[in-house]
Amino acid sequence: MIKRTTAYALTALLAATMLTAGCSSTPRGLGHVPSRPSDKNLDAPQTVEVAAFAHLAGEIPAAQSTLANTPVGFARVTVVGEYMNGLGERCRKVQLDAEGNVSRRAAVCRDAEGVWRYVAPLQ
Image (tube, rainbow, N blue to C red; front, side):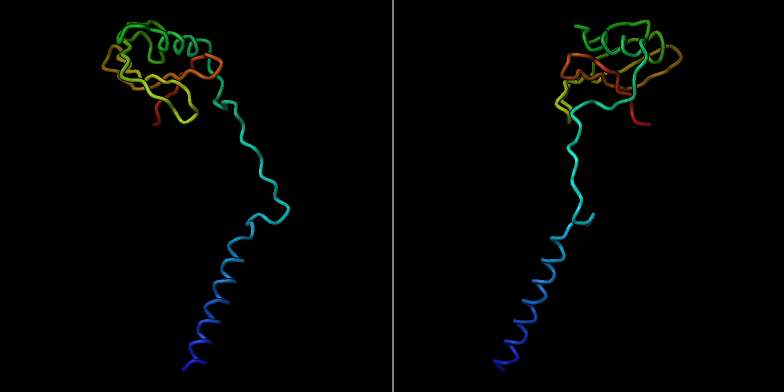
């Protein structure tokens, strides 16, 4: 009985050792060197009009304003709320209401350099 218990314990120890050794290996090979993530924003470049809208929407002091050059054209822009995104940027949620029942939610975010950029809604 003691021999059987010892054999089970040794088998369990051997299995745990093999599992630990297998899980600690790198999946990409031993020569893999991880790269440091970029601190820069890698968004697609924005047009001058969209960048100008982002600046205006980020700086409007009132909760609601009417702007001529928005991504949906002439529209009423309502600041719905503010938040901090995963990059640590200050962002504002905005509601764009244009003529013809066109309504869209989006955001504008201010990066570390103080530049506002438009963040299109996910479709």
